[in-house]
Image 1 (cartoon, rainbow, N blue to C red):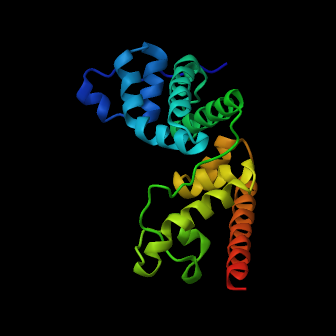
Image 2 (cartoon, rainbow, N blue to C red; image 1 turned 90 degrees about the horizontal axis):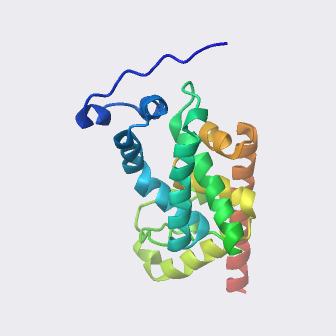
Length: 215
C-alpha cells in the first residue's frame, strides 16, 4: 500500500497564487484550509460558470450547478489523484452537475455558443471549425449575424447531447481531446469521431438550408 507524500505547506496568500491547481487541491486534502479552496474557486469561477450557463441555457440553473460543482469538489477532494490534472477532473464534476440540473428542470437544450460573439465569419467562405471559433469580422455578413446565430443554435441542438458535449468542450472551452475524453469518460478516438461527425453534419445542414433559400 502506497502513501501520499504530504504537500508542502503554503505559508501566505501570495504563495498560494504561485501554486499549481494540482498543488492546491493536494494541500487542501491535507489541511482543509478555506483560503486554498477559495483560491481554486476564484481561478475557475468565470470559466466554469460560463461553461455551465452555456450547457444548461439558463443563468439561475447554471448558478445552482456551479454551487453544486464546488460543493462536490469539497466533498470529493480526497478522491482526487494527484498524478492527474485538476482541470479535467473539475470539468467532469461540472458536466455531471449540468446534466443533473437539466434533468431536474426538464431542460434538454444548449444555448448558442456564439450568442454573445458579434464577430462571426460567413460560413460560405470558411470551414465549420472556423465558424465555431473564428473571431474575424466580415462586414458582408454583419446584417445576417443574428439570423445565423439562431440557425447555429438550432442546428447544434439537433445534433444530440453527445455531439453537443464535444463541441462545447473542445471548440468553446478549448480543452484538448484527452481532457475532453477524461471529462466524458470516453476514449480519445470517440471524442474525435463525434467531433468529426458533428462538424460534417453541421456542414450538411448549412448547405441544405442555403439550397432551400436559393430555390
